[in-house]
Figure 1 (cartoon, rainbow, N blue to C red):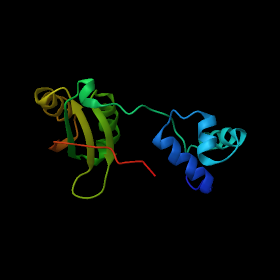
Figure 2 (figure 1 turned 180 degrees about the vertical axis):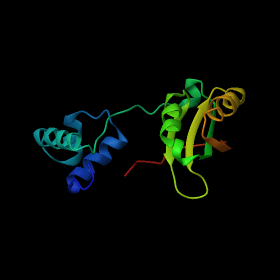
Figure 3 (figure 1 turned 90 degrees about the vertical axis):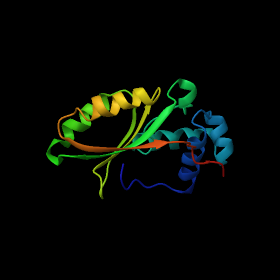
Figure 4 (figure 1 turned 180 degrees about the horizontal axis):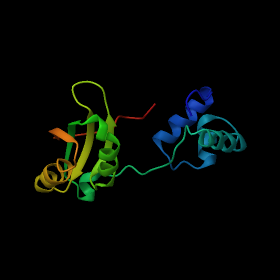
Length: 150
């Protein structure tokens, strides 16, 4: 929720949950130095207000079998964006889609088993969507998540 008021304790809670979304309320309360009741109430309020939108697991994509990753930039016919976006969201392997301003209209993070699978995803699936004007593929050689350690 845009403009929701959060204080320093809320920020500490958000930081702690971003670092480890599996923290129990007891652990969270101890880490932030508040009571468990206060931790429950604050997490509930942050969730109701839309600041916390969910919880997820961080997965090693290579170990999962998706050894090839690429950022894809794309130019689209603007009037077709909603339908293009709908079709992109239905494709397996697309991890992140962002409509951006600048030289390109869209930037995506895509994952595939290997280069052949990536080729099929880009050339057959994505470029086959009506309204997609051009794509550029940037292979990822190495990646890491930002450290969330205090």
